[in-house]
Length: 575
Image 1 (cartoon, rainbow, N blue to C red):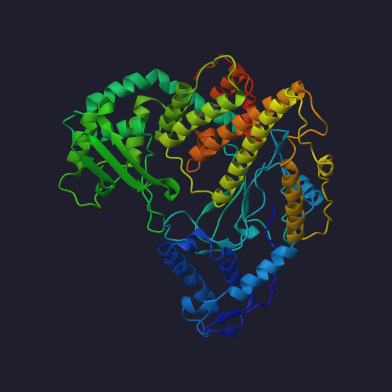
Image 2 (cartoon, one colour):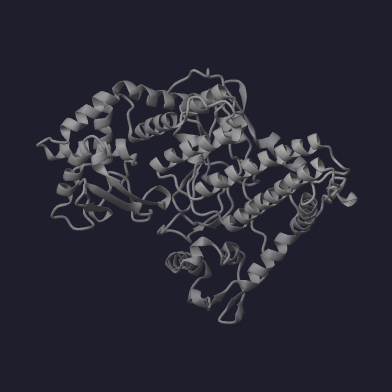
């Protein structure tokens, strides 16, 4: 494990009511953690979240300051001097060399599993910080303190040498040997959050677990018809608990909701099926149900569903209305259910069946149904990738995998549109060039200054982050300037040469427009979560093989590593 070094004081004061306040190293570190957040952080931009964030932070800070400190209220604290110091420090920071990272990886990044050398996951313990959470988390702004070895439990073979603690004067909490788990170390931070260091995603044990997970979901195919017919029958049961169970299972199956565990007061008020409250449901006369609540990670779930489009939908609509009748907005819809009773009912249908298995099954089935098995001759790889992403988006919407608008979305979108506008202009100029060449007219040539590619300037090893950024920006500007003329020829071209270049630029333009459409369609949808956790990767691998789509176009390197167990599947594979 790599532990964070002890705090090194910088001596820059906090100002309170316009006056500098002397701080101890412990107090200064907490003040610096707040300064690191920045005024533009999402938690501080919204007045509601900022109030919770600041109140929690100040509670920790005030305790560290002690009764004798003149600091009494958060609104008179000025962290700008510390922020300025951190910004200046950031500009001067020298990046860790690749050689140093490699040495650390060799020391800490490998382990022996059943005699096989395997990579370790994230072996660096996170530094102290302020807890941010998602949405309106009640503990946002709380200080996450430095983790020390005495908090860490190691999971190693008792017949092997115990790894030495890297911090002098410290030792690990204890040693255990749990062969049925994939974690190497675990600890709990001061906020009660359990943390783990586990095996890398490429470890064969991870692959075995993933394969077993998808095989359980595939097994559900043999039971799904019987389960659904039983649920439809129980929707009309005279036993209210049976009726609630059937209704909840129907919702989990058709709408892919999570079960929804009970929450303690210091957890975010996120909701699943069993924890739905009356206030989360709205009914319309035409069998339309609107669900509005915060789902996992405080992502809003707002869907209006025409229930009568599904078999049993009218009964579910009727049942939900009756469950909400004569209840207050804060009352549970499924007041006779718990997650344990629901899971117990699911396992009666099929061993190992859980709500997550339903989500995995429905996600994989949806992907397979949405993907075309084959495509007409002449369909480009880019068009097939776009269709795959459209199918992936349907799965993400089903599972409510949303994301916030990326921070630099406007700049990225403007840059992509600028590239397409440039390609459109260059394509139009090549068309005119073709007409001129056919008419034996001279054409505009590539200026000699742009004949050679832009040389990359060498970056000194001791260059700061700011210097590296400036060098890169200058290089990018020269590359962009040269790109304006790259459709031109060095000398008078032939008709065949212009036709060939026009074809290449037309293809680049079409591909760019497809990618822009894809980017804009997915700006608020997280495609990655379903690729990692819910869609059987063998469906994707088989589809790529059938249609000769490079797997690199669909799975990034980390996913190819994680799903390496699925790569040998035949193209005939069906979920």
